[in-house]
Length: 387
Image 1: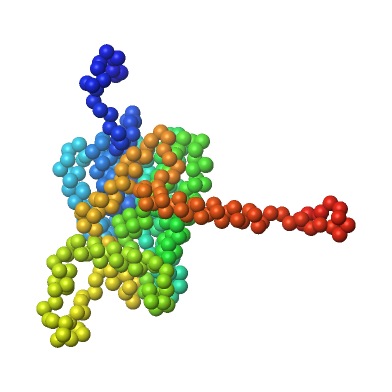
Image 2 (image 1 turned 90 degrees about the vertical axis):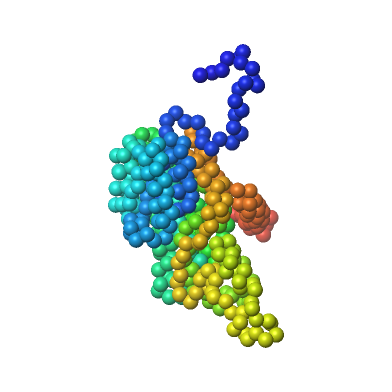
C-alpha cells in the first residue's frame, strides 16, 4: 500500500541501503547441487529464513559414511528440525552430478515437492593441485584430469540439462554457476582446475543466448580463488623436484595453499604451535632432532602420494570467507534482471581488470602486426592482395 504524501518523511522507516534479497512476489524455490559445502549451507539458512524453499543435493555414499563435510550438513539438518518454519521448506535429495539419471531424478523430486524450480545453483567444484608435468606422472595422476572435468564441468552440465525443460516450459527460471576468478586468471599449479573453470564458463556463456528467448536467465558468479578451493575438497599430486621453490621461482598453488592450511591449523590448535615455539632444550646443546616437528597439515600437499583433504576451516574464518559470496548469491538469485557475470570482492575485480587491461594491450599490438599484407607489383600498378 502506498504511503500518502501527508505522512511526514521523518516517520517513514529508513530504507535499507543493501537489501539481502530483492523484492519478489512469491517465495523462490532453490535447487543447490552440493548442499554440504559451507557456502551452500549458509545460503540455505538465509533462503529458509527468508521464506524460500530449498532443495539440497548430497552425495549419497559420503553422506551415509559421514565423510567429508557431511557432519556440518547434519548439524544444519538438526537446526532445521528445531525450527518449525523451516521444516516443510527443505528437501534433501541424493545427487551425484556425474550420473545423468540421478540429475533427472533429483530435478523430478524437487518439482514434485515444490511444484517448480526458480533458481538452480551449480556449486559442484573440486580443486586438484599440481603442475601439468606433475599431473602426468602416473596412471593415477592422469586419471585425476578426467575426474576434475567430470566433477567441475560435466556434473554441472548434467544438472543444467536436467532442469532446462521445466524452466523452459514455465518460461521462467534462473541458472547460477558458482565459479571463481580462475575463470579469468591462469594460476601456476592449478592448470587442471583453471581449465575446468574456463570450460564451464564458456558453456554457460553460450547457453545464455540459447535460453534467453524462454525467459531463463544465466549468471556466472566468480568468487575469489581461495573461496572455492578452501570450501571444497582439494587433492594434491606428488611434487616433482624440478618444481620446488629452490628450482622454480613461479608462485605455485601448492606453496600458497600449504601456507594457508598451516595458518588455519594454527587457529584451530594454538597450543600446539605455542609448544613448538618453546623448546625445552637450549640451542647450544640441542641435537639436530630437537627442533624436528610433526608434519603440518600444509605438508600433506607435498606428500609422495595423491592426497585429498577438506581444509579445516575454523567457524570464524569460514563465516568471514564465504560472507560476500553468500550475500551476492542471495541478492542475485531469482532477480528479474540479474547480471550475466558478477565478480565477488574488490580484490577479485582488481585482479580481473589488470588481466583484461593486459589482454586489451596485447590485442592492440596484434592488430597492428596482423593487417593484410599488400604485395606491390614491379610496375607500380595496383597492388595484388594475397588470398
